[in-house]
Image (tube, rainbow, N blue to C red; front, top):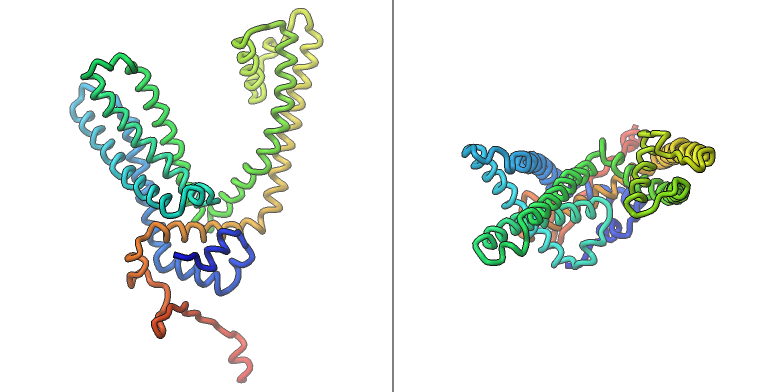
Length: 343
């Protein structure tokens, strides 16, 4: 199926064209006809699912002697696993239809939806796959090849990753509403531009002073170096102990280095970051609304892509009218000066 003009506008990020009356009317029609209800239902369903998922890992391995809690925990894990398999199948079908590069190359709301969904579902499936493999390994001669603790650690890491991307997936729904959408767009813009520039400058100063302080204290070894990095980073966050920076041989120089380090990073750079974010917020205030409309359009097309052809052609999802076997968009226009001219 070929892509329509509006889809090309969204892909090429022609923000100004989205404000054209015909384009805006088409997107509003799609939103009101099928996208809004589906989006709201998905939001409610995702919230319920995430609370069930949270309860499932809170109760895991808890009170193993209690039959009721064990059975309840098992049922929760089933309720988490089955929808994850269904969503994974949906994401893989979408990837097959669009292509791998197209699937991972989308931006904004579509990127959040694809990455978070795929990562979460894969993590859940791999967690249960690990349990099945370990169950059969216990009955075989290979049970000592992979220790139970290693398998448990892998499961813990996958579960932590699933919890992270699972709740970050809610940003996809936040982008769909005017009250939160522009705010989320602004946050991502700050992360992409302000934080990126700040991180580069911060890394230079942090590496310079932490290395100098490490040498002045006459310490050697990787363990001591990483401990020094930990001390310096803790000082940046406010957990500062002056004795951690002191050197017996170069006491005065270590004091100067420590003071300059704290002034430059804790005061100068962080205040500069706050100022940069303030400028970004002021400059983005007017543009954020237009960028949010772009993200809303991406959400509409993301929902539409997950619909089957039968669902798209159904009467309840039809946002067009058919005239002479051709599809048209019905547009209503008002002329406020019409009655003034006839007076």
